[in-house]
View 1 (spheres, one colour):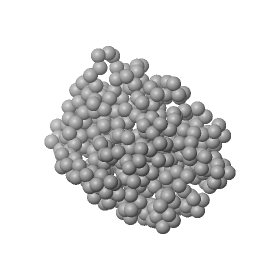
View 2 (view 1 turned 90 degrees about the vertical axis):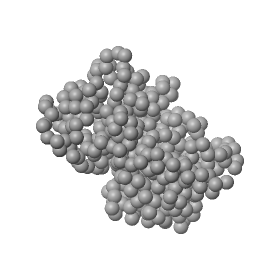
View 3 (view 1 turned 60 degrees about the vertical axis):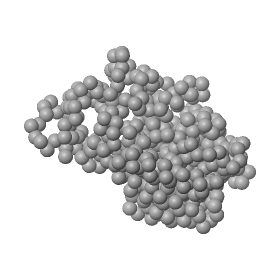
Length: 421
């Protein structure tokens, strides 16, 4: 049924122009919105009163990890990690090897719910489950669509578990891309051989898509590349064609030389920053200087709240980055530009978030950035519209039984933790 958002104030996501008219929302992956003066006297319309509320395009997470969803509250690893590589080995590479189909589904359902309740209706995810590779992306896609979130998925291809698992990752990616939009995922330079890198780039070219890879998240990634290949990470990726596509996503990009930044800045590739994950892993601080304008934001699986990610980037960046009030919002919205410019479907204008924003001060185009940094939070998300359908109403999910999914996730979390011991 067509949806009308009544009496709200629409904020254009790019121009920040305010429009106070009713909004008619079309359903469908390519649906549009239009402004109307009067509400039709037609029972076939769903009319949602948004008096006193603000409406804008919903949000995008530029880099997520569904596979980490069941980690919250788990026990300490068998060894206390002393550096980033040990965090991977004793935490994440222990966890992802234990994932089975039921755990992956529970992780995806919870992640999708958490995202849409925070106003995030499109998720770019980077998945790993080395002992359950086949069909894993389809499980995630089905879960996201059940909840009402759009997606751009990939499997994290890597040689860390041997050539056979690398080939399985390539096969999973190829099979998934036959039916879905997606990317070709790679873990990071230090776990990807030249042969696997070339195969991944070739697969991305065959499917007219890009690579999604972690880059220089820790200094160890650069050390390995220099010692093994005699070059730095971005130089290696560039020489192998991984930066040639405007669909390519480079995660983190913390430990780069000026030449590497120059290469990225002069390529069509995109960089995604993940501030809170970097803080948690104590790997360094993001600085956009020299990287160009193709910078967006993700969560790296730490959480599913993009408004929170933007604030973290802004406040941490006051000491370590070239970031201001306008540029933090631009990076926050750049994921929209990434999707639109590359022709990915699922984030049209009929994806909306309704904010019940209780500001004590005037709120308008002229001071929007100040409210974005110091005022707007996920708690203000009241209703969410995905592809023209109301999926969250008064903070409650309409598409699935949230309590049932949470209960199921707790069961799967206990199974996962038991396997990890």
